[in-house]
Image 1 (tube, rainbow, N blue to C red):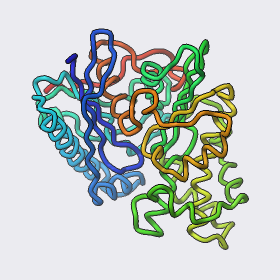
Image 2: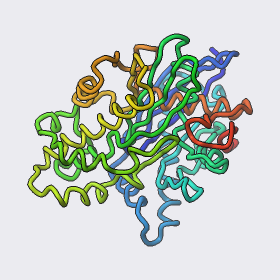
Image 3: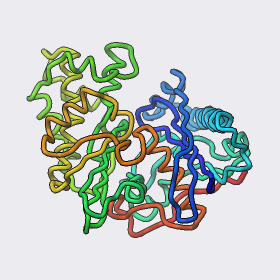
Length: 366
């Protein structure tokens, strides 16, 4: 059966918690045995969003939200194990990313909350959390952390590949034979589309990109949005809701009052596609294969936009090379927890900009 770990991810899309039960063999090879997801209640999503902004009584609200998140994480783990017949005593550790509420590596900090001590108490399993801080302490961005995992499970000795994770933010891992592995955030993924859809349709996301598909992307608005300096900045780089939020969008939209909400949504979809495709063309033009993971991989309109922008590249889901898109990030945190307990580095300095390899995470014993 191998050594069992649970990996958990709750990302910037704020759709909920994804978890996998992963077995590691003696060589560190991973096999996902089961997966489980638990949606965020509306009030949890709203409180995470509220804590993105400076406001009164933040410390107390953040602590209470961390407790609530730990309860959701514990429920996710317990339901996952119950469905598979695995006892908590059989699981070596939980790797939990926590929920990012601030990401400011330029100021020397990043903050993911989730009360890992409470999670260990509620599950009876050791927990490894706070993966980003050690990389930030070493001068890195603390993100993206998944490129090292992508190298371990998706690299091919002869094929030039790019792994694209489309969550709230999109990030790339460049797997080019004979070259160092690198990766970086390349711009918004679902984040702006979700926020705009919530505002105008009252829905948490645009399923399959159907609303965007009925609109018309505006090339002048797209050009204005792409003028954001982040897109032209060289890697290593990372970003989040601290930059790409609705106020950022509204400052540009003030110059385009004639556009309909649906046309703005279509333009935001093209913004996500352009950020990905342009970064691949600039930094991995030799890539023959592009594989998508994360929630945005299931947006059919976004996938079509990517195909239109990259017609000569083979484009598919990561399921084609061994791991379904919805499992990749949670599996990455199982892998990172495994590396932590083995006292092995989990970061990739070429991706994060850290001064060197570092063992990541803090351990919360059961």
